[in-house]
Length: 514
Image (cartoon, rainbow, N blue to C red; front, side, top):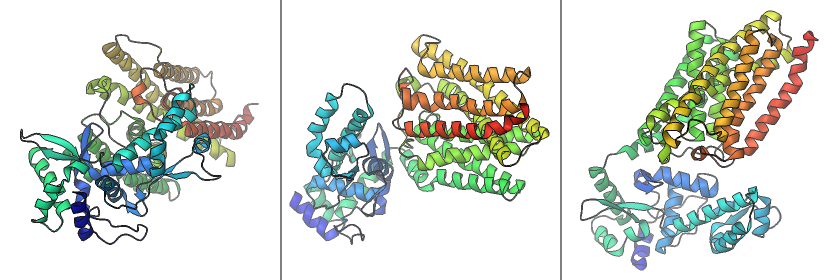
């Protein structure tokens, strides 16, 4: 069988790209990108799964100049005995892991084909680590990547839909699906038997099943997060550099439309509210904050709200587009406790909207602090900015309180208790208490206007702890379904920069009070 496949593959081979020195076989066929594949508990297009897989393994979406789908396809062919000289390397960041693997000085990349035989030794080292340190976590991540690469290289990761006599589909690894009898029969019908067999399987699947996975293919090709980021940046530039409010407002509305489309695509693909992982909460917080800013700004007749919404949305869009190691854009099935869409769409949405509203106060607070450093603001300016921040705090605090109450009701429904001092619950309550104290202090004039701004800005650190800190640092409790790997460096850097900014700018602001 392997000889037949090899002979046919050589006949069908295409010229390779400059960086890759081997044959591409049928893997350069663009139609393969739309192939349905079963992985992660759902059906998705091959291009999406290939991109996720190659990024996880290589840290980027290309290997030796080949795109993710072509690379994924070629690596899968190794399990069929075809000569594929494509080399994929694992990037090893942790210094202890590099020492364990005996990599040379300054060497951080190692060939996966060399790592696969080391799997048992790496696993033994991982098991020997009794404390859950960063080294043990890195070893665990390496084990996952080695296992995935071995599965991909053996042709067991690419699962093809195959129709059974019972008119149902079974998902067969490509190394078994492309058997000798199929290839010989297809060779009589088409000069490209491999593509013919695969696309025929796709056609059969499409005739019986819905095409929702093709919606995901369209979504992946539109690159909506990049479009939304560009629109937000243009809008912010119009507002701050060119003082053109109408164009800035137009860009804001376009951004909302694009992000609405982005969220709608994710809802159509997943069948749930798009707020179940860190990527989606960051996306929704920026989206929600911009909408809140536009609505409040319209009724208050204040252009500054548009600036706050655009500035925060730019921050979230930058995270979505450039923090690949921290935020995972992949769409995964829900764990059982999250499958009640009513509670998911009320509790989590309300909490994330509250974070977005509170982030607006953080944006304006930092802007005022920086602005005052270079040009001393008048008392009228301070009163103006304080009133705007106070407005956003009221909306954010009310939403947070409502979200906590809804979460308690959901907890009673799911876990049989309204409150359990889970880390996420505890930190949400801490945030609520902090902001309620600030609101009360401002209302009673206990907190002066000049102290109100740095205090409000510093208080957003508690939001970041409840939002990111519980997930990336504490990583414990009943909200484990929302946890993510990595991100501790980001959070530490955020805290450090914010504290340093407050330390530099606050003294000048408070100087007149002394």
